[in-house]
Length: 158
Image 1 (cartoon, rainbow, N blue to C red):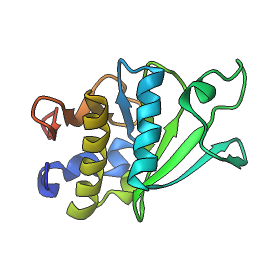
Image 2 (tube, rainbow, N blue to C red; image 1 turned 90 degrees about the horizontal axis):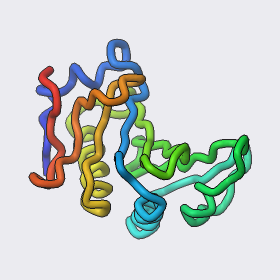
Image 3 (cartoon, rainbow, N blue to C red; image 1 turned 90 degrees about the vertical axis):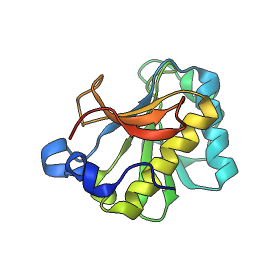
Image 4 (tube, rainbow, N blue to C red; image 1 turned 180 degrees about the vertical axis):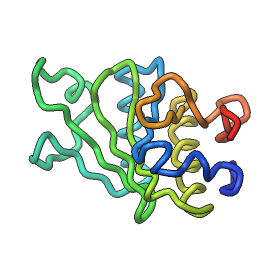
């Protein structure tokens, strides 16, 4: 299913002008939402790798990750919803599920469809919008999963 057409959005996927690592977020989240994302990754069988610094570990429960002591290294979860497409979740805050994607991996309609499907899966599971901002432009989403229309939509004109 195609939510967005590559020709209409490719200007937002130019790593040279948009930064290569746009920020994707689910605002107004909770520890429970984080756990639902972890459960979704497992249920879908997406390849993943959880690490704390250089140590690769089994994926813990969200409440354990988010209750680490102050000053502890920020853990990350790399998820591959499809070969060659990676999302890196960072457990910075229990109130925002946040991750990065790499625009260099998201070139063309096929890869755009993978991204839209990934955002849709997360948004449907949480029942919340999933917003993508240009790198460093938090609060100015370009596109996102819209709960009401049940699809990924453009939130800014190209």
